[in-house]
Length: 240
Image (cartoon, rainbow, N blue to C red; front, side, top):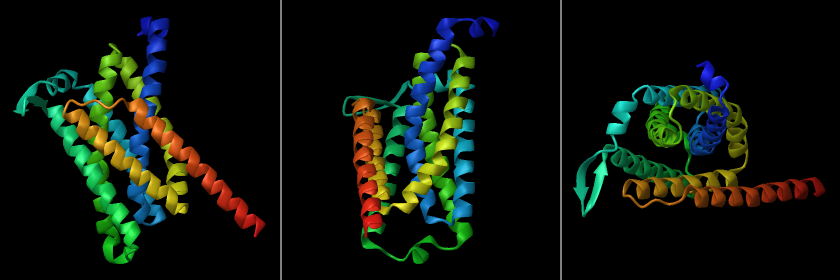
């Protein structure tokens, strides 16, 4: 342990891996912000905390099961000359879930249906939100940790990077969720991001890798344009 604390290579690996985990956590934060937007604020805060706690637990649990996790990359089925592992199947399932969830939310926003008729009892709605968070946390955690395994050899470094990234996700999730709830066009943009991320997960599952840099650049560019739109609307209201 002391060797790691005094090793420049270990610190460089920690910083690099932490930055990567934060970037990969953007998907988690966007999904959380969208999925909790349809329940009361107090429940939304609680659901967000539970979701981020589960994200941390899943990541550390997967790190402690490295041998089993690496085994998930072994092919188990072949479809049209493409060998799929359990990891691929989970990514495909998670991607399809994200696409379906985002499409349903977009349809609901466009149709402008009554939220009360759709949400059901508060307890039931809260439970359904937690179920969705658990499903997507498992998918994102798997993707995140397999990436971490490829970048670092020391379990301590991987756990430290995951904890730091989850703390930053926790701090940023509240303001992001509040901003999404207050600006309907931003929510639509976040839903479009989820469709994009879902497509990338499905493509990864079928061995067609879409460089994440392209996706995150598109997200950053669109978010910057939307930020200018929000600022312009605010200035027009002040002028009026």
